[in-house]
Image (tube, rainbow, N blue to C red; front, top):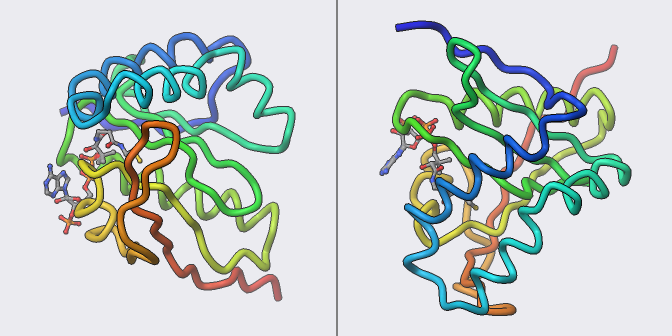
Length: 159
Ligand SMILES: CC(C)(COP(=O)(O)OP(=O)(O)OC[C@H]1O[C@@H](n2cnc3c(N)ncnc32)[C@H](O)[C@@H]1OP(=O)(O)O)[C@@H](O)C(=O)NCCC(=O)NCCS
């Protein structure tokens, strides 16, 4: 199988990345949401909204196989995994994105000691396998159900 290439999202790639997010969301996450939650999600997973978030210091990493987008992770400072979506599952792509995002976030902020995520109900057990722990019960905000979770990271040794 062709290797996965991980890179930072290019300046003009927001629409392609949001299209990937929409495809995966519609298949795996939307069935658990009501219309209010779906509308709220797509206000967030929107190319212009994403561009604006990048100005606030966030970044998006993408995973590609033979040049085709197969995954994405958006990090929003100071410590938030804002989105993590993968098209071909169980191949370690989410783990690959997460490991690279932690490294990149810690280069920017060596004191970063944890990541937080609002996990979809679908992804909760998958985040647990990646080392996250729930910090509370299921929450419901603006039609979106999520589990607050965190991952304790080793702080980067800058010596
Ligand atoms: C959550 C998601 C990003 C995981 O992507 P992935 O590339 O398949 O994950 P990985 O292959 O890196 O697997 C990570 C771990 O989860 C496990 N895993 C992956 N999919 C799983 C599933 N459906 N059920 C149970 N475990 C699963 C893997 O085995 C691995 O654990 P291991 O290290 O103990 O073997 C992907 O399922 C997805 O896009 N889901 C829909 C969107 C979503 O809910 N995103 C989260 C929004 S907050």
